[in-house]
Length: 258
Length: 104
Image (cartoon, rainbow over all chains, first blue to last red; front, side, top):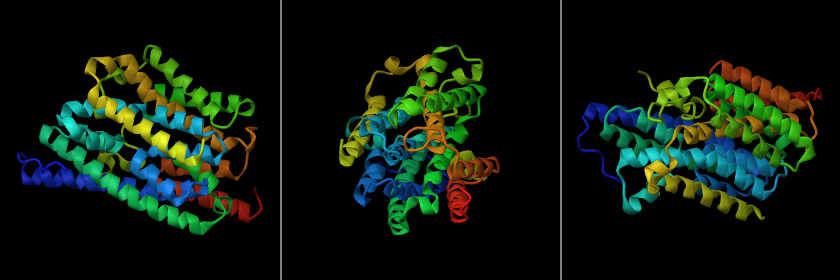
């Protein structure tokens, strides 16, 4: 793992690390619900652990277990998870510029490239703090997310029948909470509404998992149309312009006192 | 497809996408249309997942049951800026309570 950045004042270093940790704790906390939902969906303990350790992208993981839980095919689960993960590719593109990593270091860097690490990194003004923010947040989330997944899976196994504890309502609530911070622009709210309607219209006529994929077309069409809000066209480099960063209450500016 | 195949394939593709960002030339993926589609995809997919998992039964038909009440409470909690775990637990507790009372 990379050395601590040498040219950052102690004060700033502590500030950035505190932000990393608070985002890690906030994100780790909902790993508990992922673990519980995953075993309720019928995945075993090891499959649940594998998703958090290897897939390591919250929304995609929730999608995989959500689609498996409702009887969708493996192919639909993989396709939805992959479409949700496309944004991580764009984060990687951006992080590769900030981090200046090459060779084998690109492997851990890529693995830790998620909403939270990207958001904390691009929220820092100076390059050395950006790098510290990325690695610190990535590692904090990785460790806490995996520990809490394990805890959630053990608790979930002990609970038994998922319906009795309302876990089938917890899954869509989790998706709601993941969606919430992305609805800041009018365009996003329109896409969300159209996608929901498409999915419900298609649902009675298609196998489980497919309606969600069909609804993804709403995003493609919206992307091709000219934006009504010029703000949306801003480069990903401005964190406030991206509805895509920071899941639920984990966005750094909400978690850390100013 | 076995569950393990699903888990490993999804993980493999997820890593490949992340890694791609670090290895492809920047011009290939840069551009306002790609950025916009990529930003909107999670919105569309997550919204569709909420709709399907709240309002459809196993066969895909539309239903209104305890899950809808749970999600309504979740939305209320989100409006009050509740943290993720609280939102999820409130939704589950609402659905579980309605069922225990025999109301849904």
